[in-house]
Length: 257
Image 1 (spheres, rainbow, N blue to C red):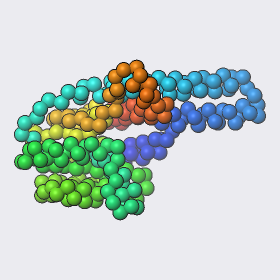
Image 2 (cartoon, rainbow, N blue to C red):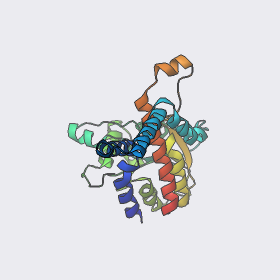
Image 3 (cartoon, rainbow, N blue to C red):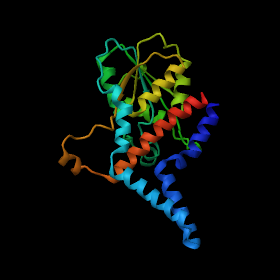
Image 4 (cartoon, rainbow, N blue to C red):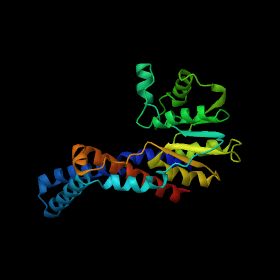
C-alpha cells in the first residue's frame, strides 16, 4: 500500500497542484475555444482567471497555513530530551552533488534547531530520517549529505543515527517503527506547516512524540504599510499550493490508511 501511495502521489503531484491545474485547464480551454468559440468555455476561462486573481491578490494560502501552524506557535520548554527525530527534506540534494558542496533547502531550520538541542541535551541522540523522494532514483541520497553536514559541524556521530530509504513521511515513521525508542522521551522536528500531518501519521504507528515546530511560513510583518512592502503575488500563489498540498496529504493518508 505504501509503495502504491508513493507512486500515485508523485505522479499526480504536478496535476493536484492547484495553480498548475488551473493554468493547464485555462490554456487547454483557450486553445479549444480559439477554434470553436464556445460561450460556456469563455465563461469558464473568465472564472479561472478570477480564481487565480483572488488567490494571488489575497493571502488565502497564508490564512490556511496559519490554521495548520497555530497549535505550535508556543514551544514549551522540554527537559531531558532523549531522542531528537528530524524529518528529511533539508538539503538541495541534486545541487549538493553537482556542486560537490552542501546546499541547504528552505527547510534547513530543522537541522539548525537539532544542533542547538543536541548540544543543550548532552545525553540525547539524533535520528535523521531521509532518502530519495524521486520517482526514478537518482542514487543521490540525502543521508549521505546529512553525514557530511553533521561531521562538518563537529558533532559526535556516535550519538547520531541515520535512517535511510524513507521517501515520504509515512515511510519515515515506518522506519522509525522498527526501532526500540517508543518508550523514550522523543521530540519531532519538522516544519510547522507539516507538523499536523506528521503527528497524525505518528499516532498511527503509536508514537507519543513531543512536537518541536520550526520554519513557520504564516507569520507576517505587522502593519498595513509593511504588508504592502512585502506584497508578492507569486508568494501568495506558492503559499496556497503549500497549504493545499498539506490538506490533500492529510485527506489522502486518512483515505489510504
